[in-house]
Amino acid sequence: MMKPISIACAGALLLAAAGPLSAGDDWSVDWYTIDSGGVIEVDDGNDPPQWRLSGTIGQWDATEARALAAGQWRLTGGFWAIRLGEGEVDVIFRDEFVPVETDPESLLNDTGIDWCANGSNNNLDCDSPVVADYPGQDSMHGRDALAREGELDKVGGGAAGFDFTKLDDNGNELPSTATEWSCVRDNHTGLIWEVKEDDPTHLRHKGHTYTWYNPDDSSNGGDAGVQDGGNCTGSSCDTTGFVQAINNAELCGADDWRMPSRNELRSIVVYGRTGPTIDLDYFPNDEITFLWSSTPDAFDDDRARVIGFATGNDYVAGKGVDTQVRLMRAGQ
Image (cartoon, rainbow, N blue to C red; front, side, top):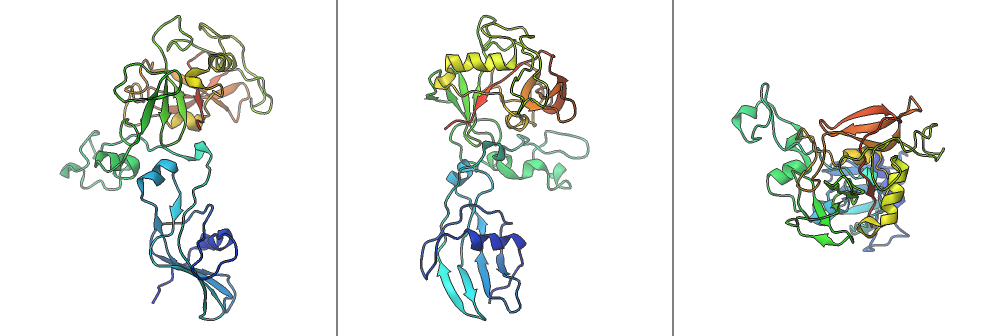
């Protein structure tokens, strides 16, 4: 006998089921969000109900699913049935999952904190008895915990739960042992990132600085910023000028590079480290500095958001301030 657990959003499953169904038909769900585990049952709210959706669900634990996206689910175990009328099972159908295209900003990396703490110390082994009285820590859950236990399958490599692949100047994959590379692909979010050089004459020198400048009134927060106010080589020393130069150079074989949003930039912050809070094995030549995001400040139109890579904190700065930039693209 099925024990029902009411889940309000489960009703969306019925609406998302594809096409007219008959017994044994395949079906798919394009997108839905629901808590994991147990048996659920939901009806149309009438008394008596005219239809009822029943079954069990669970999280998709396959490695390839984690690589596709965070937050995607499939039905597992048991069955799903729509009951039309009192007690009658009209349709029974098998489970099938169809992945969807997802905005890269919705795909989150874990924090990079793979150590535990107690009341007096950080960087402790999470299996140590000295942290036994401090359950539920960040590092005990998610991709970082799986990586620490050796249970996270990665396409490439990287600290904690991060999964990076090095790319050459044409965008071709390189082994993790490569000593020269131009870009890094985040295999979890799908974003591709610029890698800095340690050469003052190079377009992508780590020390070059840029003022924030965006002439597009639809996205600049009401103030275009300051043109050519930084200190650099190979481009106008503002964010738009640098983006144009990188696209003209077709870095890693692409010409759709852009400024990262605040959330995209935070996706490569390794909060388990300090000074800098980034994986230096994949992002070398990184200075402990502030990086511009494309995100204008919501309160002051002459300011924009920056991420401080000494601590990973989020700040605002005047658009005339000159500081560093790291560009990205959404990948394929």
